[in-house]
Image (tube, rainbow, N blue to C red; front, side, top):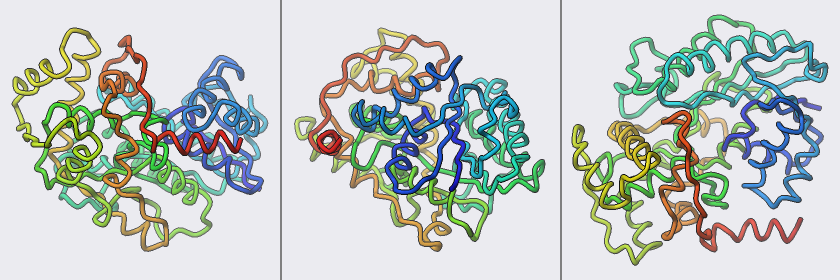
Length: 398
C-alpha cells in the first residue's frame, strides 16, 4: 500500500488530484497537509474545494478517507505527526502563486520547498518526491518550442516572481538534495476541466473570456496556446507519482505540438457557443498600447471598482505571456505511453457561459495579482448544460 502526502489540496489541481485518486480502485492511503489552525478548519477548506467537483454528500464521503494534517508545509514538524513516518510518496503542489512580491514568493516557493523536501527526505519509506513546478521557468527569451532539458537556466529572463522562484526551487532541490527520489512535473497553462468545464475553477479561463469580450488578443491569430485541463493534469500527476520506472526526471505536462490551439480556433468556438456576440474579429494588442486596453476595458466592463482595475492590470500581464507564443514539448510523456491531453478548443465549449459575469470569474485569481483585495464573486449564472450534466450524473449515482 502506498501512503501519499499531498500539499496544495485546496487548489484547482490539488482538488482534481484528490477527486481522481479517491475515485480509483485500490487501497492507497492519502494524507493531506492543509493550512488551518485545527483539523476541522483544514477539512472545511478541503471540502469546499472538493464540492466544486462533486455534490456535497459525495465530497464528504470521499474526504472521509483522507487523513488531514493541519499546518503549513514551510513549517512542517515531522515529529508532531507520527502518521507521516509511513509516507511512501509525496506530491508537492502547494505554492505561493502570486505574480509579484518577490520576497514573500521566494520565501515560500524556494526556501519553504527546500526545507520541506529536506525534512521528508529523511522518511524511512520514501520512494518518490513529485515536485510540481511550471513550464514557464523557461522565461521570456526561450525558443518558441520549449524542451525540458534546456531549463532551468541562470540566463532566463522571468516576467514574474512566481516563475523565477519555481526555477530557483528546481535548482535548489537538484543540487541541495541529490539523494531525494525527485521527479519534477512542469504543467503549462491549466484551464478548466474537460467534462465539468468551469465549475471547479474559472482560474485563467476568465482571461480567454475577457479577451473575447474585449475583442483583443495578445498574439497573432495563429499564435500557440498551450493549455491543458485540470483533470488530465491530475491524472497524469497520479501516474507520474506511482509509475515505478521513468525514463526522465523532468516532464512537461503540456499540449505540445499535437494538441496546442490558436485564437483562430478559439474564435470559431466562441462564435458557435455565443452566436449573439456576432463574428469574432480580434485585434492584436501591441506592446505599450495600454491606452487601447484601458479604453476597451472601460467600454466593456467599466473601471469603477478596485477589482476591475486589478483585472485590467492582470490582463495586461497575461498578454505579455501570450506574446511569447510558446509551445512546450510533451514528447517525453507521449514516448512513455502517457495519454495525450484533450485539446483546449475541443473542451472549451463546456467552459463557456455567454451570460457569465467575467469580472466575477476573475475572483478565482485575484489574489495572484493584488494581495488583500476584497474580491466580489457575485452570483454566478447557470453553467451550460454540457458543463452541468456530468455533475448531475454524478449526483444521481451518489
